Amino acid sequence: MSASYLALADSGRLQGRVEAALDLLAPCTVCPRQCRVDRLADQQGACQTGRLARVASYAPHFGEERPLVGTSGSGTIFFAGCNLGCVFCQNYDISHLAHGREVTADQLAAMMVKLQNIGCHNINFVTPTHVVPQILEALSAAIAAGLTVPLVYNCGGYESLEMLRLLEGVFDIYMPDAKYADGDIAARFSNASDYPDRMRAALQEMHRQVGDLQIDERGLAVRGLLVRHLVLPEDLAGTTRIMQFVASLSKQIYVNVMDQYRPCYRADDYPRLRRRLTGPEYRDAVQAARDAGLTRLDGWAA
Image 1 (tube, one colour):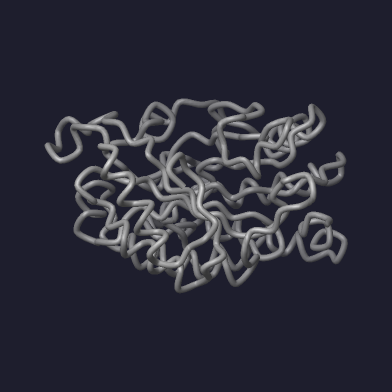
Image 2 (cartoon, rainbow, N blue to C red):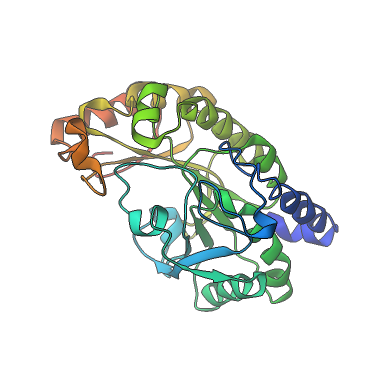
């Protein structure tokens, strides 16, 4: 199966997507924050990113989900900055402190091609939401240099539907977080009271575009939706409601029920976030996924 973006480029429609995405940078309406700063003039809003994307690191990654890693790794590109503000972020030096270096479109394209050429099965854009225009801008150059592997949109789930619709036919694999079911919790821990509504709309649109996860004869993901859910202490994430919503889209959606929560960044300022999960809390979360009818589960208790 060929990556969808190749057909989009061959038809001549990719350039129109690039131009439409760049137009959203001034005033910036790339994500639900709607900061409306002029990023083409290098102004910065909530994501702390101006005209150029900033990359914190890029390398083969072997800690991602099995269908992405295969034998040679997922080619991850970690972007600095973020449109969320999670108080417990494990990558806060990248997302909150925005440590990274600015890259041009050609430099970003070269990273993609290098990861493919060393054997990575896909290009996995980590925290891409605020730099979608820059990714699209780089994609044409990457295609010209021989890029053919699938692209993975590895995001926090706080997305603009307008931007996601520009991505139809670009990304074969969407991997969003489904962080919170409750707006008050989302406001407290990520300053995004509208997160649940935005996340649900985003997952619905992503599933419309790519459907359930398809895995080839090598065990590699080639197309589809893969949802991540980080279980929080005291069921703060609202796991049962999250799983019921995901199952309402399709019971065949691949879901990673994640037990990796640990207190990081400013978590100690919030008493309910100061500890790791207990075993029973995690097992209850997995059972909630099963009770919702989901059958393709990842995670140690799945």
